[in-house]
Structure formats: structure tokens, C-alpha cells
Amino acid sequence: MRDKSILLIIGGGIAAYKTLELIRLLKKRGASVRVILTKGGAEFVTPLSVSTLAGDKTFTDLFDLDDEAKIGHIKLARDADLIVVAPATADLMAKMANGLANDLATTCLLAADCPVLIAPAMNPFMYEASATKRNRTQLFEDGVQFAGPANGDMACGEEGEGRMLEPVLILDKIDRLLNQKKIEGPKNLLLAGHSDSSRLEGRHVLVTAGPTHEPIDPVRYIANRSSGKQGYTIAIAARNLGATVTLVSGPTELKDPDGIHIVQVETARQMLEAAVGALPADIAICAAAVADWRVDQDHPEKIKKSASKPPSLGLVENPDILKTLSQKGPKRPQLVIGFAAETQDLVDNARKKLKAKGCDWIVANDVSPATGTFGGERNQVTVIIDEQVEKWPSLDKQKVAERLMGEVADTLSKNEQAAE
Ligand code: C5P
Image (tube, rainbow, N blue to C red; front, top):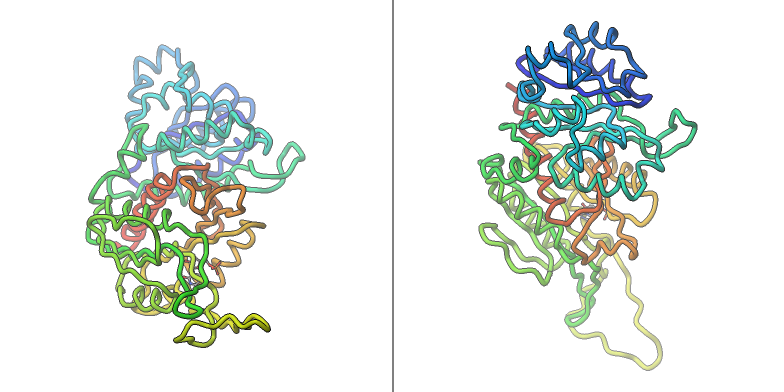
């Protein structure tokens, strides 16, 4: 991070004390850090501790003539490669989502032309409040990046989602953002950054999508409710970033997307064969809802309806495509991403899946009928990368796909930089 400039905004929350550790970590990595301490933030940490760690003066007031003459709030924003808001309070998020600019922090945020990362921290009820939810969705759609929040005990004595992510994990996210091939601004980072048609140039992305159909006999089959929409939008988002895409698709109603190599399959075994046959790939994303089981015997003729009793069908397990692609070996894609469709204990089950399958990321989604995810246009996902759990707001599936592929591109850039 040696040549990177970070503008850190410390909001007014108890987690502000953790941000001091973040400043230390950033400085250790060689970044230059300028800090704006909001009025609320200054109730929790002092300008003196901030300046001591940052090695620079702490900015506090929009109307400080001296500062305005020397730097000015626009330049403060423009000098930054990345703006980090930690802790991002409900109030700061509301102001950002609505474009309010009545102090130095919010003025800089509005004037920013670089990516903005926020680390929300607030009481779980405040985080789940309808107004905050609306603001989160707006910020997501504006391209603001999120680090956390995490689940756990809160300083107020309650428990739930709203703890500020640990500084090391925020640092990791900063690292990924700074290593994007091209840092895009401003508000519409999502649109600007993610519509950049060369970020995945030269990469091969393999996507599995849709359900599989497991024949019982020539006319009947076992299936599931997957529409394939999420997988198809991911393939399209990867193509839009310049990747060469192979989409291995089970039976869906969807139109073949242009500019994508599509392999149509029916069964899990065919899907495995097509996916393995498409290797090598840089990235594999298994979004297909593969049938776990198939019938243990081939029935070349239609099973007759007998008057006495229904036939009994034996089942055998299908091969696990995600697990197979995740196996160590020369052909293992650099990044393997699985999905976890759950109806209960989403994060716990997804974490178990991450381990069991050996993949790198899991995108978990609640597919309880009430969510309307299966077959619907929207998806609310939680992305799990190692210890990081990022709950995204409910978004259009296309937005989920664009965001996901943006994160993928960031990660590949980071890996590349680390290897250099
Ligand atoms: O085990 P489960 O079906 O819940 O795991 C979901 C993830 O594993 C998804 O990414 C899905 O595409 C993948 N999967 C697979 N092959 C299977 C079963 C699941 O690739 N046979």
C-alpha cells in the first residue's frame, strides 16, 4: 500500500476505538492515512490519539479557514485513492444515501471520485430498521463497498448483526479494493467499475447454472425449482467484464446469452463431465442447483402403472461438481465459488459447506418459499470468504451478479499483485 492514500472517516460510535488499530495497520502497510474525525467520533477517540497514529493532523471542521486555505475539502477527497468510513453509523449512512453534506466528512464523501468503503457499526435493531435497510440498498446500488458488519455481542448489551468488522478484516477488504486493476469512482463505482469491459480480459470463467433433471424413465424425471437466472446473470456479468465464459446449463426457460459458450446438459453426471471438460478455467462459479440424487437403475422403458402398488425407487448420490472442481491439482481454478441455498441457519450451514466442499467462497441465500428467491427476480445473499461474512441487501439478481463479479475481479487483481 506504499503509494496509496487513504482518507479515513471516523464516525460517532463506540467502535471508533477499533479504528485506531486500523490506522496502525494501514500505516504499517505503508499507506498514507488522513483522518477526518466527525463530531460524534470525537466523543469516542481524541484528535491527539488519531494524529499520533496517523502521523498527520486530524481534520475535524468544514469551516476551518486554515485547512480550507491549505487543502480544502474537495482536494481532501480528491487526494484519496480510497475513502474508508469506520465506524459508519446509521446517521452517516443515511446522509450518504441521501447526498447530505453538512460537515467535513459528508462533504468529502459527496465530492469523492474514488471508491468508498464503509464499515457499518450500530445496534442490530438500528441495522435492521426499515430506514437503514433502504439506505443500505441505496448505497449498494450507488456502488459503495461494504466491510461487514459482523454478528456478535454489542457494547449496548444486545446481540446480533451490527458489530464493526475487526480491523484486520477491514484491512483485507481495503487491500482488495486498492488492488483493483483500475480504481474507478465515483458514486457509481458499481456501474463504472463493473461495466469496465476489460477487468477480466484473458480470463476463462466457468459457470454452472439451472437445475438438473434426473430421469426416472424416458418420460419422468426428478427436478427442482431453480430457474437458472442467477447463474445466467453471473455468466453475463463475467462476459461484460471481458472474460471468456463457458456456461454449463441444466434445462431452463432462459434464452442463450450472446457471446457465451453454452453447454446444455440434463443430468448431474453430464454437468460434471461438461464442467471438467471446460477446464482449465481461472474462476469457477457453481450456481447450479444440482440434484443430490438420481435413480439407481436405468429404466429404458416407461415404468407401467401397476394397480397393486406404486414402484419403489432406489436413489444414489450424484457426483459433487463443486467439490470436484475444488480439489487441489494443476487444473484447479484460482477461485472456486459455490452457492448454498438454505432454509435455516444460513451462515452456519454455509460455513460448513465452505469447508466440506473445499471451495474459496460461498454465496449463501435463503430459499425459503417466503423469500421468492427460486424463480424470482431478486436475491438476498450473504457472501462468506474465510472469516468474513458479508450480508448484502436484497438486490436484483443482475446486481448481485455484477457485484459478485466485481469482487472476483478485485480478488484476482490482489492475488496477482501479491504474486508479483
Ligand atoms: O450440497 P449443496 O447442494 O447444498 O451445495 C450447493 C453447492 O454445491 C452449489 O454451489 C451447487 O452448485 C454445488 N453442487 C454441485 N454438485 C452437486 C451438488 C451441489 O456442484 N452434486
